[in-house]
Image 1 (tube, rainbow, N blue to C red):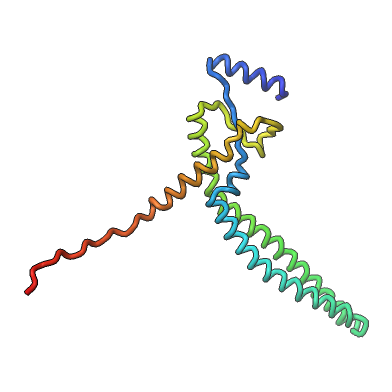
Image 2 (image 1 turned 90 degrees about the vertical axis):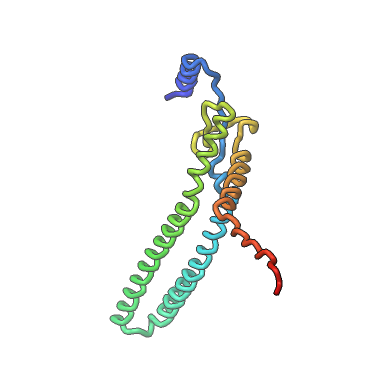
Length: 190
């Protein structure tokens, strides 16, 4: 659909519904990164990635040292032994590359899992903001093709504030403080 047709369609919908068209936008990716839950998830993910990266680099360095040792010794090796060693090293490098890809996939899956719980909450809150403000549509800046809009229509900061206040309060409401046991009443002494 061309831009002109889209405008005409919006005008038609607007005139048929006899309602004022109001739109705003939000940067969902930025919101996920900046809400407290998102920051905590990113910190956890970075910690896991760092641990896995160190182990991966250790394995990479060992493989590199093995290749360098083979390269230095190749001239003194029997051709059959050299060919076998080279085949072994190629297999190890192939396996290493497969593990590298698997690690990248694992980290991406962990990120989707960790951050995936945030999106539905953001959508719910965004719906509340849109209803409160009487908005017809809210666009996601990163995926809507939105080229320009005034900053006054950006709901991202409001969404982040609302999320943090709603889900911080929600977390403390879910774990009530332990009930205090009343002290025994003083009784008559004997």
